Length: 362
Image (cartoon, rainbow, N blue to C red; front, side, top):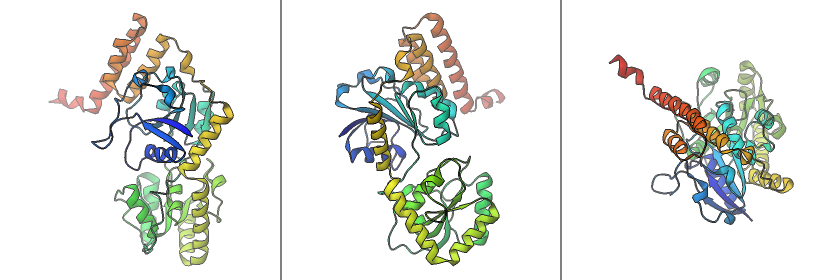
């Protein structure tokens, strides 16, 4: 049984909660991330792990990165194995590179970044997104009233494809935001779910759609999706807008073939690509590598640690955390001065976000 200390920023039906539920099915989980409203107590965003009693009560410290400004201190000193799950690397690779040295193991959602980060870290593994069957599920009895469904962002090239689909086929209101549970109902009402990533990455939608039992029609992918789900067997891949429209029209007309592929994809997803299967993959990696404490930051000097944390907090715009880090540091004054430069830059970024230019125009 694995005992996990889980950190990050909880939100209902988010990646952290999916991992929390999956870890709980094979062991025990203690949450030490940000508090959520009044329903879930937690810790400060820069909580010092040294203040958490009895670290021997856990086998693994697991940090889930979901964009929120939370990054505890003392990760590099924690006497148990530490690991992080990095998501959305195509959108802010620099932040993940700054956080990476603090962890013994890194699991990344996007394959090509595993090789990139692996050049400077000894334990990096590809771990794609997955589905949570308690949320991403087929709602039996829902009538399939949509030819095509989509939930998510609709900017750029994806928006053009969505507009083209909407002109040709009956769709849901894809501009309307949905929470994951409502999304599952929308997908259950659709014969086909459309997917297009922003930057060629494997996003969450293939797993969500397949778990809901609809036929997935998604772009061709070189990041490993076609190794998980085969074309015309578990889902359908398109390469151009014209091919997309032709394939959607074809499978709307061929119900038996559409249902056969959708069912095969549904079964494969629930068998191999749940967050439970991802937790088993993590456990296997840890067991095969001997739970190695190989985080580069474990060997940093106080000066190196100060600057490493300063870069992370500056990137997150965590001004108070950075200020207190400098105050408490035992690093040399010259190094503290360099950290103060990060603080000044962080303040400037925060003011810019607040629209400081307006103050001077007025």
